[in-house]
Amino acid sequence: MTATTRMSGGDYACVAAVVAIWGSNFVVMKWGLTGLSPMLMGALRFTVASLPFLLLIRRPALPWRYVALNGLLQGLGQFGLLFTALKFGMTAGMASVVMQMQAMFTILFAGPLLNERASPRQWIGLLVAGVGLAAIALAHGEGPGQMTLIGFCLTLAAASMWAASNMVVRFAKRANASYDPVSFVVWSSLAPVVPFFVLACVVEGSDVTWQMLRDIGMREILTVLYLGLFATLLAYSLWTRLLQRHSAGRVSPYSLLVPIIGLWAGALAFDEHLNALQWLGVATIMSGLLINQFRRRG
Image (tube, rainbow, N blue to C red; front, side, top):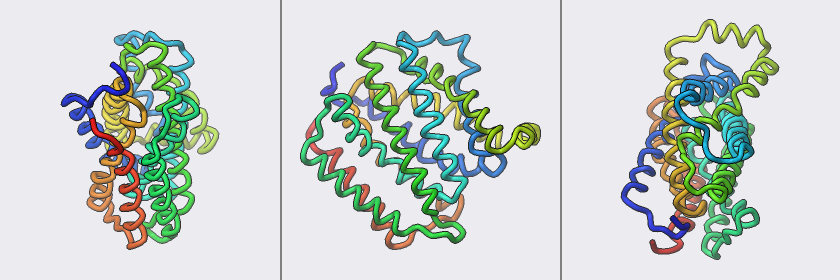
C-alpha cells in the first residue's frame, strides 16, 4: 500500500469504530479518576492492554526502539498528561476537542521528520485551527464544571505527544510495512507500565497508591477494562492499521469527528455546557481541520 491509496470501506469502518470508542473515552476517564490517581490509572490501563496478551501475541517484527518509544510517547506522554489534565479541571467534552489538535501537530512534525510536505491549504487549516484554539484558551474559567487553564495546557501537551507517537508509527512502517498493528500496540503498551507505577508512588506516595489498589471498586475496574481493552488495544490497533495504509496527514484529521461524540457524552454525563466563546473556538477548530482534511479528492 502507498500513502496515496484511496480510503476503502473497511478503512471507513475503522474510522467509525475509533470515533465511537474515543468519543466516549473522555467520560470514562473522568469516572475512573474519582477513585484512582492519574498515574495509577495509567499504570492499570496499560497493564490490562499488555500483560494478559504477551504470551499469546508474538512481539512485532520491528526494532525495539520503535516499540518502546511509541509506548512511552503514547502512554506516559499522552495519557499521563491527559489524565492529569482531567484531574485538574479539564472538562471531558472540551478535552475531546483540544486533543484533536494532534492532527495539526502531526502535520507540523511530518514535514521535517517524514518529508510529507504540507500544502498551502493545510497551512491555512492550521492557522484557522490555531485561532480557534486561542479562543478556547481565552474562555477558560475556574468555577465548577469549567475548563481550567492548566487543564487546557496539559491537554494541548498531550495532543503533541499523540502526534509524536504518530511519527513513530510512520517510521515503524518504513522499517517493516507489514508489521502486525495488534502486536505493536500490545508490546508497546508494556513500556509505560513500570514508569507509571513509579510515578504513582512518587507523586501520591506508596501508601496512598496501595490503598487505592486495595479499595478499588467496580466502577474503577470497569473503567480500566474499557480503557485498556477498547480505547487502547482495539482503537489504537485500528488507528495504527490506518497509519500503515495511508499518510499521517491524511489519517489524523479524521479524529475531528471524535468531539461530536465527546461533547455530547460530556453534556449527558456531567451536564457540561460551553459558553459562546468556547463554541466559537470549537467551530473554528473544526473548520480548520475540515479545510485540512478535504484538501484534495480521493
